[in-house]
Length: 329
Picture 1 (cartoon, rainbow, N blue to C red):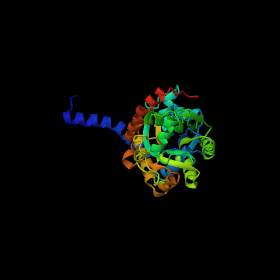
Picture 2 (spheres, rainbow, N blue to C red; picture 1 turned 90 degrees about the vertical axis):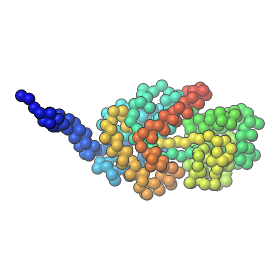
Picture 3 (cartoon, rainbow, N blue to C red; picture 1 turned 180 degrees about the vertical axis):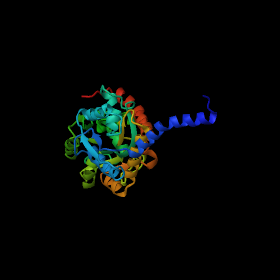
Picture 4 (cartoon, one colour; picture 1 turned 30 degrees about the horizontal axis):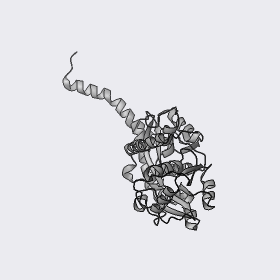
């Protein structure tokens, strides 16, 4: 039997329609059951709190709840590995940050590739760090502090939260850009090193604003600069590093969402739309601002923007980390 060209095209178009319609239907009906959001740190920490705030905003858009599962340990590697091994069906969502998705790949031997084994969903928030020193530090500004560090080469005690932590890598970047040498003093966390900074037992810390700002406002320590391009909304009186005399000294702990590699594009787009709507919600925005978090502009909340940002951060930090011979403990 022979068929006309018009009949042939109609038949082939009909044959191609079911898969396309299946993808569309999947995107429209997803999700049909609860989504698990894996937090790679302990419950109650900043990443957990931020993830829950955004997840609550997403629940107003998605027809299913988002259940939070905290998988702490190994500097976040256990939780991120849990996401990497999960099925790429959109029902496992991971929140991560600069440490888990950039730094850890340079200092640990991982069972996954943070750049290749995930599908990016969206950038969420970031917070810069503050260069703070003991109250008795003689320097009155950042340029003076750098001069003091040079005059006391190798003797200035800089507190950190351990090898590879943001305060540690911030200090390494300070050494590189300012041409100084310091002595790193590791602590178990921000509370202990802040206690010693207030007591004058150490000289300097590059610290999270949530930890440092209460002491700055109380007048128990000095703040010299914020490691960002623009001033912090929570501390507009503190100059940026560019303004203070050390341009390019940027350090921020940013956070984003990822799903396992192979998750359908339609599902990625659905999750991204839910995140963007949540981050536009005034209640969510205020709750994040109260934590000192700065929401990325809407134009940077796309999957492509997160992929490009993560690659740029990896390109910047991996050479710094490896040149300093930093190894995971």
